[in-house]
Image 1 (tube, rainbow, N blue to C red):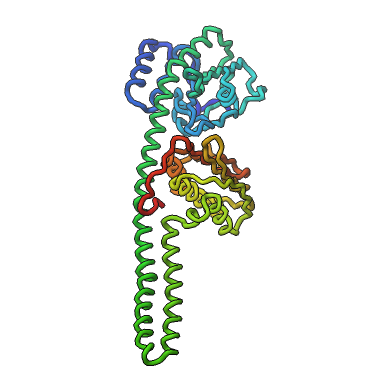
Image 2 (cartoon, rainbow, N blue to C red):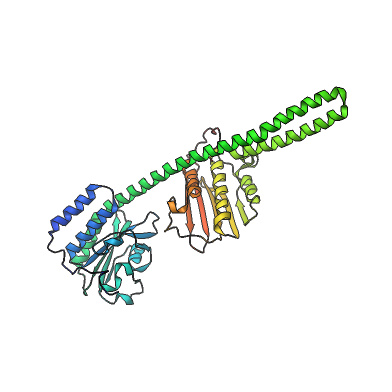
Length: 415
């Protein structure tokens, strides 16, 4: 890609007039100014260029999904693309460095390197030489990748490499803290959103139940009372009329019981009390004829609150499969091994890119997905989603049992 107005490149040494102490002060100031990743990454990029007389530097930071890198810092003119360039682990030289945790050095002819993939937004074709360094924290946790490029051919010396590794380690800890802070803030926002949605859903469910009881059960009980009064009067005057009124009253009792059971099922599925989780999951599968469900279920009883959480997660997940996955076959598995309850639902549907839409992100549309994750966490477990476009989706829930204690069943269920 030829340089031009869109990618007007600085020349090597353009930052050399800047005192290295000033750049170090930038780093210190960025590290102490707050938990934001971008200011720190931008300061790192400036420091690397100033210290190595390179032309540009890119700082790619590991995403929350741990499966891709996002451009978090860059020297001009590429700083306009911060947050917009994403690289999958294993893709291109930078992705190769991230997945292998090994440095890569290319002096020239990088287009012939089988790992190379051009990135038009970052002006890849304009640079001849590059070095890519993994940024890691002790004891070896990957934080990101540091890329340095030069327009003219350059042999990076051992001193250059030592300096880049040192700089990468210097800021890796701070970048990791900023990344964890961002994850925590996002999780807190997700919890707040989930709490608001839960409250709204609870109120909606209460109104629905109140309406069902008023319009159904209450009205039928009123009619039942009328039928019984009519039967009582007819006992004296007309035995046949009394029998007919009692038959109608019996029908009303049956209908009322059915509605009452349906209302109770909305709060806690009776099938869990009758058949346990394995039987409840099998019953749930029979109620979904839209897809071919294969079952692998272990008949193992768990504390009530865990059975309820796993049942609701399976219910929500299977509804998502029916609505969104365009799947033909799905597998529902439940087992307990080594004091860990494991629920897995896998489908052969269209799947999606989890690196582009991590769990809890707004674009997942996520009350259903987020509520499943929240349910798992509320009982001490963890939910994970594995998916790729065209390769289906697998949702797995693991809940440790050894340290769990069954709490008193709440009045009503958090839907």
